[in-house]
Amino acid sequence: MKGFFFAMIMTAGALPLMAQELSSAQLLDKAIAYHDPNQLWDVFQGKLFITLQYPDGKERLSEVEIDLPKEYFKFTTQQDDGIVEYVLEKEECTLMLNGDTSFSDEEQKTYRLNCEQALKMKDYYTYLYGLPMKLKDPGTQLDPVVQTKNLKGKNYLVLKVTYAESIGDDIWYFYFDPITYAMEVYQFFHDESKNDGEYILLSDIENVASIKMPKIRTWYYNSDNQLLGTDILTKAEPLQ
Image (cartoon, rainbow, N blue to C red; front, side):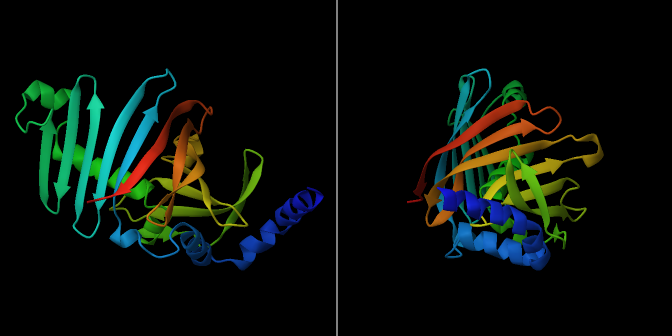
């Protein structure tokens, strides 16, 4: 036990030096080597079962199918008494409510049945579950300086990331364990001077086709640490 605490103290003391010696690209490569050691994200084909827990105790169950080689994405979730499905296959978009592609204008508005929302869901899930590998995507701008930060009593190596104007103007920070290089927190701001946006704590690991994905993600507001919700990767399986 004494050896463990000594190692932690030594790591904390060496953290600024580690940050100086590592480039942002090197830190990202080490993080990807931890999360995707066999470099399989680009050919990922799997189904994720996700439970979203709200602070008031309510839950929402969703299924996400991702087939990157075939450019296929399917999102299924229950909203109130309706089962909503978004399917994107290359350039084709299919929307369904309770298994039917026909629905009223009111239902379309209530359940946000439109291809723009389908694309948002695709971008959201492939981005967050594809991290940190997605930080290699075109338009991603890594700050060259690796930062050190303390969050919730733990010291981290931190990457600051911005994006090309055509992609988005949020500022992101990614927090990595200084020993394993596991990604344990990410945080974003719309306007950092206002301390808006959210931070997300990642815990536990689900090994999905040799890719280490966070099993539990807990979301908080930056401004007041208010809990927004928790999503849990309850199960993952390969696509048939």
